[in-house]
Image 1: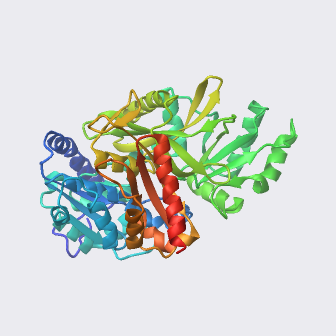
Image 2 (image 1 turned 90 degrees about the vertical axis):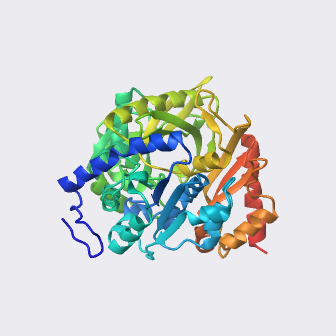
Image 3 (image 1 turned 120 degrees about the vertical axis):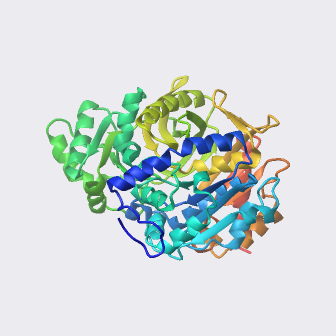
Length: 514
């Protein structure tokens, strides 16, 4: 046991049998709490939001302004529309009041003063690259402040971006359950674990190899795929725990010889020929990272029209697995593997097909004991009059499609029909959106949160509750330093939503140069 100077109880060692026992006992509270809140929107509860990106630090450093991604879950402040819900939001650094006010003013039907009285904001005052949850655990007095902000631990839970051993330890320290995946199951969210789950679910996936350990394994896999498929033009190489596409690479077989010379050719050519998505990454560094976390190699799916849809699923505290949305991802980077944003809903031509595949995978994950939100990414290639789909990864956590959908749901109180693939407001009005985490330009640098709000209101971009259309911004804190901001552009059609996005870009470009 670890004794801390401010905690009234002894704390079990991280990862110990006692911590695992306490964590399992806490998790049993989630079902009864969910039933209370579902049956009565006035039921008291406290939601502790710790938006820690507890991911590989070196991989995370490849994303500009990544520490501001803690702001993506500010959409959870909209839970304050429930009149007896409290929210405790903890971040690495202080969030500007203008940013917080921006979200509180979006709340439908709740006075600002009432919502603010039920919100507690806490900060580590630490800008280092250490994941937020680790920072909190290293500050026992901050842990006590979080505990003090929870009136009734029996009616509280912790929610995070992803679940690791650190989040499990924090849940035990706080004495509240974690609404998220048990860290023991995180391998299901790796690239290798995803491929295993797809096979178990009977969902098509690209031919390839998983659980590769090092550069030699990569070379052997690249060679073997070409031998099995002589017409193969490219192979995808992925780190097991890469995210947002930054851990991905592609190898081209152009000019590859046949027969015994293939293996020597790949070994000689790969260091120079491999195209890694992360800017500035080299094969030597990439190979060392591969040795640390492992990865996969799989066939690159080719076609005249290729898309990357995504299915967002949820396994709730009542052990019900459902598909909650479909998206078409907007991708960029050297070979189109880096996540930039999404459009909702996915194309009607195939949304039902990928929804059904998502249900199969959700069933497998539910049987394995997974919990919370996750997304399944696909590669879809047009073949004649239809589409061929292959599942490529499971993001067993909240992701880039989570907060845009939550923003839409919290703002409009609508419902998603998975059979039709449409989201409609209570008045049966369909809603669409175009979302991006990467609206970025050097000319935006220096714009403050207040500037952004003024620009949005003056130019008619602010979300209008009456028409239920407009633009909602996120990652606002990254704007001044990195010239980067996120948007969710909500409209009455796909084209209308994209027009809001184009208008937003045009307005920011113009206003930033004044």
